[in-house]
Length: 95
Image (tube, rainbow, N blue to C red; front, side, top):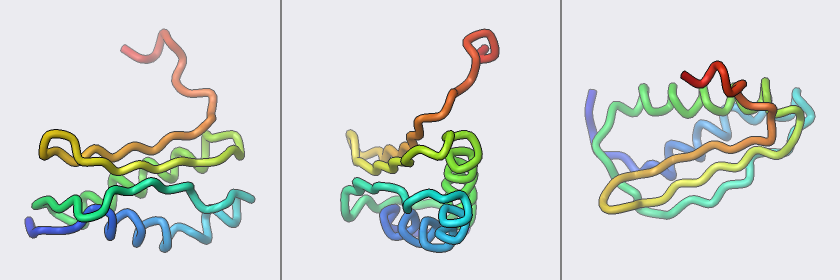
């Protein structure tokens, strides 16, 4: 189900829908730095699913510390990141 979408709109909507999870975990809503008009052709449902999974992991494993979201456009490619202050993945498990 591929259509053109503004990724910043998708991110804001997912964060809004997940706001109750952030509140239940005692977290502020994520700090967002989103470039506007980052348009791409995608399956919106799947992109929402990926964003939701990353945010759920940040809530679960971020040790109660702030979550940051960025969206940038780099060489006509959308780059989306979720950062938290959790303990991460052990070096031996990265492979």
